[in-house]
Length: 292
Image 1 (cartoon, rainbow, N blue to C red):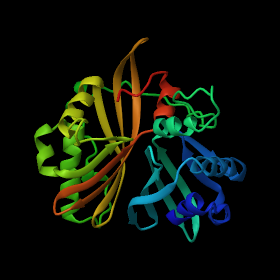
Image 2: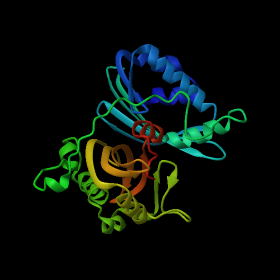
Image 3: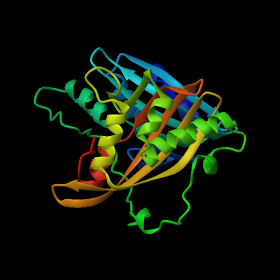
Image 4: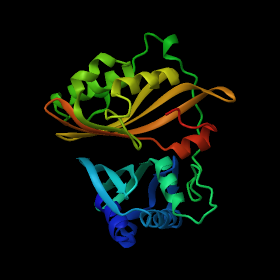
C-alpha cells in the first residue's frame, strides 16, 4: 500500500490512493491527524503542488512487517534533497492509518524559492497544518531511578531475529543512553546518516559522535521513549520521542521532539540511517525553533 503514495508523487495518481482510504482512515501530517475524504483530498492537492517544485521522487529505503509498510522518500532537485518518511497500516486492501514525518524546513526553503519575488521565504508553508494539542508530563527519570523503561525487546515483534534485536538495542543504547563509545561498533566511515537535510560524517559536517554530544548539551533533562519499531531482515523503522527542557528567549520550556528513524543494516553495521523531524510543527507547537 506504500505504492499508493509513490504513485501519487510520481504519477499524480489520486484515484488509487482515494480508493484505498476509508472514511475512518487517519492521515498524520504536520503532527495533526486528518479524517475523512474532504481533509484527505486537501492533503493530496498540497502534495501534488509540492512535487512540481522537485525533479525526481525516489524511494530510498523500505521496511515491511505484516500489514505495516514504511519507507523513506527522497524529493530531489538540482539544488537540494528533502526527505520524508511515510508509514502505512492496511488490511484487505484498505489503508487504516497513514503517518508522515517530513523535513518541513528543507521543504519550505525550497518551495518558497519558487514563489514570486517578495514572497516571505522564511521557514513557513501556507498550507502546513496546525499540530494537534499536546500536554506534556514533567516526568523526570532522575527522580524515578527504579522505574523500568521500554527497550527494543519490549516493542519489536516476536518474530524479530535475535541479530536484529541485538543491533537495534545497541543503536538505542547509543542514542538513548548517550553511549558515544558504541558509535564505532555501529557506524563505518561509509555510513550515510542524515538528520533532516543535514548529512553527518562527511567533510564540513559534524561527526556522529559530535552531533550526539551537541544533542545532549542542548536538550536538558533529556528523556527518550520508544513508540513503535517495525523490522524485517535488513531494515527497521523506529518511531520515538525525546522530552527535554529547551533554553529559549522566553526561558526554559519543556518540549517534545517526535522522531522517525529509518535504518538499513548489513553485517552488524548500519549502512544508512535517516532521521526526520517536522521542524515547522515543532515551532508552531512550542514557539521555538528546533535546537539543531
